[in-house]
Length: 275
Length: 269
Ligand SMILES: Nc1ncnc2c1ncn2[C@@H]1O[C@H](COP(=O)(O)OP(=O)(O)OP(=O)(O)O)[C@@H](O)[C@H]1O
Ligand SMILES: [Mg+2]
Image 1: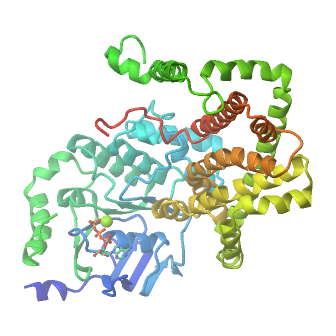
Image 2: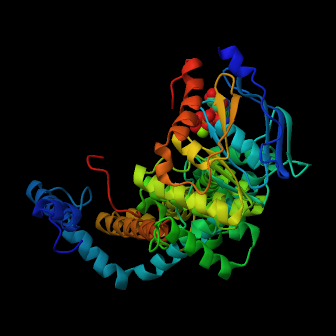
């Protein structure tokens, strides 16, 4: 059963094949450990992502999702394989990228607004225009009026939303999000899902979203990438051909339920707890 | 903060300086009473009132303010010179592992030499004036600032650096936006230790050989068996030390504001 799953052929070209933005081939990551027992975090990852595509990644804790995102963000070295962005081998961070980290990673000596402005400062974009953009984004995530607060005056979920604004402020074309809504309550989470869908459809960004919530993955994505751990690998890529724009009520339809069940099955058959 | 807070009287007393002032007054009164009651000779332990009297008349009789000014100058100039070179070398060493391997062993070796033992040499080299005291103070203030600067500049969390690099930050930007602010709390710890040691450094220098300063005055008073006068200067010195320490703390709270900002302490901690 698990054999069948792991040998399923992963499509190299996405179904709605536009120009390929990102091509990952034979990607491996082995962490050298101090105790001598190396960890194979990623094994033979092959994935093509089309320009403007929304891809969700699901998989149990420790299956290498963050590792994959860090490699794509250009801050973590890969052990082997190739990653190419628009045909160019990826060898470091890119200005086209926006990243939401699993932890908020805010700088405690900067106000909320100054934290959001970090990419603007680093990349020396126009400050006045970006400040307006930053305030807009903060209002969008429900943090209007918190611009001059400091991170340790915010709740965990609020900090995470500041991190989301920071990833968007320089208008990147490719957005990597690692569990961005994990610290949010169900209601805020649904609102944020709606906003993310709106941002994506209006700006045609390419988005890669790591999430522990299977319904969230199905609801937002064009394709859901299913990963399993030890070693971390892709066991399935499921195209979600539900019509857009998607409404919350869609989550109650049988089609939606079938996608969720198809993904969930992978984890029960692998004997791994559903996250 | 306001009168609306529901703090009890006991808690408010603990927070205010009143309590420590009260303890101080009781201590002084007990001292005065005990010395008088047991008739302790004033060559062994003077009464607080005799110390106060000596202090008061010190300004006229011994030109105390002049000696205070000399010592203050030695402390501050030595501290600034030592802290500045500690900071500078700390930056260089933290940024270059190569320079660290070349220089740091010598720095540590130099640090292990007791400065008191070096003081006589410094006095011979730089003379009996303030210059030798400034040099001795600087050598003492140097190391705590250096060590803390190095540790501080290396203390930036990996994920903060990773975040900046993700947004294509250069090495210089990472330094300015993360490493430096992260180092500030450490640097202030170094400065605080250094300022207190600077007081000691100046006095040690004056003990070895000087023409003015509070250390010089202490030696003179001791020579004349003037215990009350010696005590008066000791108290003045500790006031100087506490004042300088307080100034560093003030700057630290202004500059490293994010550390104790919330003011919401963990209960029971
Ligand atoms: N810096 C590191 N050094 C050594 N091993 C690491 C390191 N980071 C991650 N690993 C290992 O790599 C594997 C994958 O980790 P990763 O953080 O990518 O998982 P994840 O899928 O993001 O999990 P989660 O859902 O809990 O965030 C884990 O087994 C972990 O032990
Ligand atoms: Mg992770």
